[in-house]
Image (tube, rainbow, N blue to C red):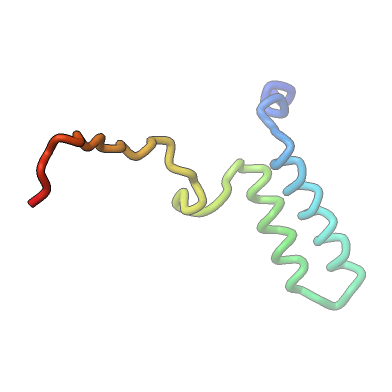
Length: 76
């Protein structure tokens, strides 16, 4: 089960996990609790496979329709 779960991971998830763990470790060596929070958020995003909340950073898949104008039409 764990192997199937790890097969779904891509490079960006691994990058988030690595940066999150590094931030948590760095937060343990420095008196900066903000690094713990940032690291925890990144680790949670990697483990749960969530990115931007609400799909705010998703790129739309549909292309806008381009209307072709007939050269013989008169403009008003």
